[in-house]
Image (tube, rainbow, N blue to C red; front, side):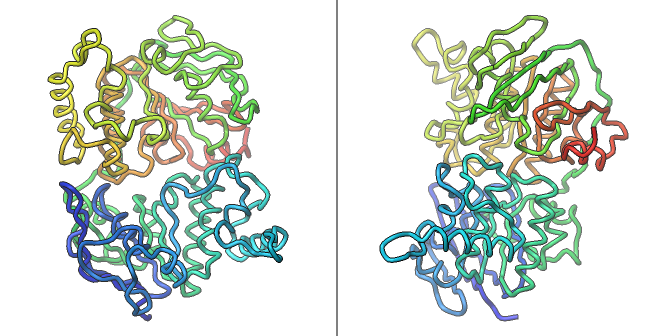
Length: 502
């Protein structure tokens, strides 16, 4: 196989952080190379350099034997490099077709030829087994379908090298299997692929080689034939990682959170939660399993004061609450780890220290009247950064400077620091590395064992199965079954999620 991508001696320094430290690696045509490492290990920085989005301090990158010009993203794309970013680069109000052709529209005279664009996209989607509706509006699509649009947008350019940054972070198990098949087919057709993922079973299933970064350095190269998931985790983290959750028997108490007849509309004013009844007990984790887009987001947001309730009651410790806003939900006793940490979990321009007290910024000991107690804010931040292993040069750096996993740790640290009676965790480990997943899982179990009533909403069925004491399956805006996690059958729950069993 010919060398398609050659990275030689790449280094990149940011204030207080050496993101890449003299990294060299190659990718051949037709090869799938998985790039692994903890959050903040330097993976995204390296691949942004390949795509021309970051200018390294030193080193060289060649594509097809020719050096690239850093900053010339258009020239790099023209040479056959495509990148699918972790955070979608789509225009929500535009259609699938409009997004895919954006910047390279087929013309008929002076006008865009949408008929030709639609035909091209239909043919492209069939060719790669990624069926999409070219006329659908992006904001109306579930995240799995949006991911397909991102991939098709990259593949339209006759890609020779495809970079995938966390492509399965928001996909269902079925969609993940489909995408892994697409990756393998692309490689078989001669496309070189670089895959960033935190899901080690995906690496074992699809990668030809595995390159591991830690602390900005290249630690080693291996292959699925030479190692296993535990070995990969140890290379990434530098210690052995417990991949299976050690969950003790729950000591379940009385009902803390009760939901009766809850009805909620989505952003399109369509009824997405259709009369849900649910009880959550002290000292248990109740998992909500379901394919994304079946009302889970609206259900959580209605309970946490982020969305209007059309009908129904939310009762906390026997007290019926009114249609709340997030601050009053917090005051009623609800901690909330939101599914979108960027949009709802953090203020990126604020310091880590200030983000750690967003729920209590106006309360003692962090404030007295209008006066902030900077000493207590600093003391709390330093303690939380250490306790929750938030990787940062300083607790007073902005939250936006953190990697994805460390941003999530800030949210988890804040929401667990008060020991409120109800903890609602929505997609708590989305896009974080194995070490951080282990840590967050242990924190959720610790909260349960201290007596919190924990509602866990996750698209990761394995996460639901390993952490939950009971599992409620949500489909079509309704709870279609509640099962005990002991002996729960994965395939049966999967069928319930897909609406195949009642």
